[in-house]
Length: 241
Image 1 (cartoon, one colour):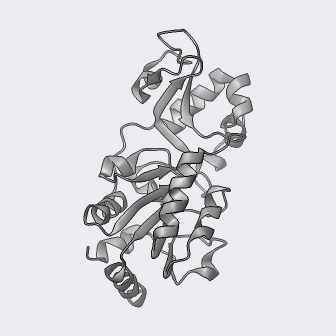
Image 2 (tube, rainbow, N blue to C red):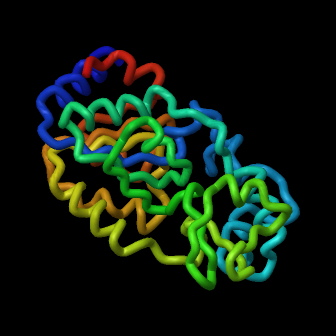
């Protein structure tokens, strides 16, 4: 492991443009459960399967049930960034990083100080009226009695989160692809790399070093220039930035 940490140090030291690609595993140390681990949301028991609840069809047909699950398990506003979030933000601050491409919807990268964040699946911090487009905070949604409605036109409010059956934002995808294509180092952290089209974005990387840091196996392990299967807490604090 020490050899791998030393190699990661060298890669970061020699990098000109790093892009981080992050998944749910990055936020678990902040107290946010991931979706696919043994203890993740997909293994929990609800009236409906989580995969069904966070779909566009379910949102429209069973809005009250959607919001019960969403407020209980996805709208976590009291969590704080952990060391990994701050590590990435510091590298961006020092000019080493082009930013973060993330599958997470918790807003913790920005809270840690990252300025260039491409949120592939949206954010719980943004919410819009489905009719007039008025913006509402996450606190407004959280504090609503059941389903949140617009205080201007009375229509349903929807989180700016990409649900199953919905497409990703074209401007966000374009920005993420441009960042990845411009990077000489791509560091992938805490993602199973099985959710498409997001996971497919790393195919646009043509730089020098692909680094994968994840506790579990991913489909791209064999393509990594450096593969570290360990927790971030055992790796990143040992890197000097």
